[in-house]
Amino acid sequence: MSINVTTRQVGEVAILDINGRIALGQGSESLRAYVQALLDKGSNRILLNLAYVEAIDSSGIGELVSAYTSAKKAGGEIKLFNLSRKLRDLFNGIKLDTVFDIRDNEASAVASFAF
Image 1 (tube, one colour):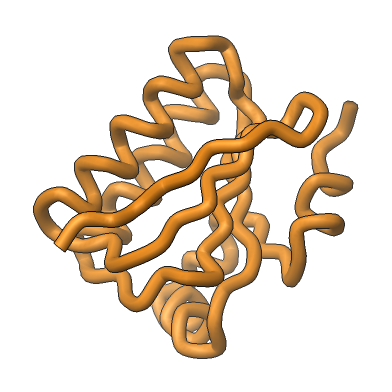
Image 2 (image 1 turned 30 degrees about the vertical axis):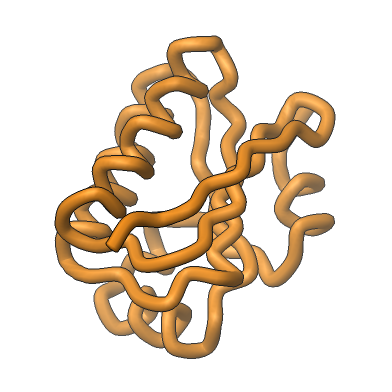
């Protein structure tokens, strides 16, 4: 199953609204392509809106970490917001909440970038 991604801009921050499953196959590959396209354009302040993400498997987790690493290498950052309770518990359980800056809503996520 693939994901649907909508890209929008709020000031200097690129927001990817993700809908579906970030899983082995098209879901994780699509995420990688969207993030890489933003980084290639010089957009390195990226927010991932996970409000409509149904599930993330280990491959999807790997893609999120890879995207985070790519953004850091490009001098940027990827932050997450609108995680469901299930996803928040997953990130807490595998300690990714210590890697990613996770915000409750878009306004606080956008404001968290230093301009």
